[in-house]
Amino acid sequence: MPSDTLNVFGLKIQIISVTFEGARLAVWNNQNSHTRLSLKFTFSSGAAEINQSVTEIGEHFISFHAFGFSGFHDTYIDILITEMSTGADLQVGRVNIYRLPLIPFYRDLGIDHHDAFFFQTYCGQYTVYGNRSDQHFPQIGIFLLPADVDQRNILEALKQIPNNIRQIISQRRALLYIDQSHEGNPFDPVFGQELHATLKGINIDADLVFFANHTYNYKKKYDQWVQIFKPEHKLNIIYSHWYADGLLHHEQNYFDTHGGIDNFVRMRRFRAFSGALRTKKFFSMNYTPRPHRVLLMLKLIDLNILDDAFVSFGGVGNSDLYKNNYFEMNGDSFINAVDQSRLLKNFARLSNVGTLTVDRPFRSGVEGEAIRLSATMSQEPYDDSYFSIVTESEMLLESDFQRVTEKVYKPLLRLHPMLVMGNAHTMGLLRDQGFMTFEGFFDEQYDSCELASERISKVFKQIDKFSAASKNEISEMYRKIWPRLEHNIYHINTYMKNDMRNNKRKILDCLYSKLNDIRC
Image (cartoon, rainbow, N blue to C red):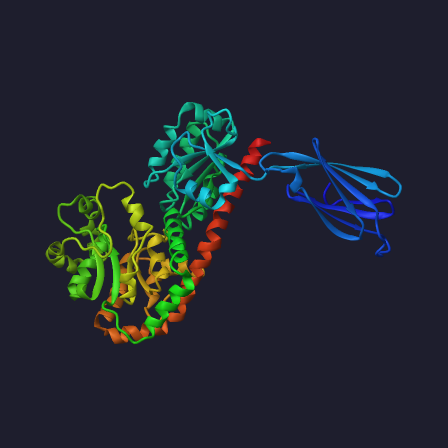
């Protein structure tokens, strides 16, 4: 009915829209004159009724506030138009209004996981959480399945879904949201086949499954796989980055409670151009001793520049941290494979360094400790140094794996240029997101090197350059690149205030659309 034009009483009347908020309509005559009208519009819903007189040509809005609609239930509006001078009525008809996108999430498979927090935080008015077994809870919704860091463990988690829940999903009365938004993995064609086979084995159609992680090209790689293997149903791949969003959520609160971002930038701009030198050249966090981080530490020791930097490091030796990372990941083999075996001679000196902390020590065995450290950051090491060397979560020897973690956003939030020891095209991904990178301060050719050995060699040449440079020289370079640093912090501030909420809403829109499909 909305948008239809009625020719009645010598007039044209268009019901433009009818929503929970009200009705928008337009009235005009063929002569387009300003003849005074004598119309009454009656809107009724059940026993409630709203009457509105319309006496002028033009567009009008009639509020439904008096109806007290919650927006959470489907309803209807009956529309009647009366020509007051003659008493003639026109029964326009009934308009159905469908409820706002309230999306039920079930906790039956576990407590609220990563994305669930942000759905509640940014789109709480559109979501509700409970158990499907509760007779008062909506009976068509979404089961949340928390996913392990290792995506292959997802296969076993799927097999462990209780039979009654499997049956509900297999009958297309619910969706499944596999939440791996805290992790990224390269798309593995073998895993793709195993995932589809596992879903088929438990009688769940893949199109009812939403799989969230934070690998940029995961969906692209999966779509290419689909074109080749042509599964009966296709998964819904979602990009969602829980660790980065957690950091940015925390930082938005930080800026809001510390005088705002303008004040934050103003104070640091003054210091940058004051001529005062900073006590350290750079800042680098490497607490978990993965192979590429140990390699960086060996390089810094080789150059004797640990005293020129703020550096964190978890240590080597007999600790579980070392055994579970460097040792289990065959760290020596990685260093040999990237043609840096000569640096292994510094291993004894690195052992003597022990554990280095900059801001907050890692509390081993404390639940949520890794999350706490990833979502928080200190100000002082950034304020008192010029740039960051970021060691990403992984540095694969050969891969087109594309992801960035919260680690690269921390320097952007603290007005630092950065070198990144991670996978290829990290700087390119940041540019795709609208950030300005640091060519001129660094030679960023390393970022396009597909082989880790070439990338490391070029990064180490940059470290050699800054090792030889004076603080005066680095300070001058820093001032020259300042406009890019300001651009980046304001760009990320826009994301924090607007885009995070919008991105979560887009995910919910996809879920809601699919829920509507299975309701029909």
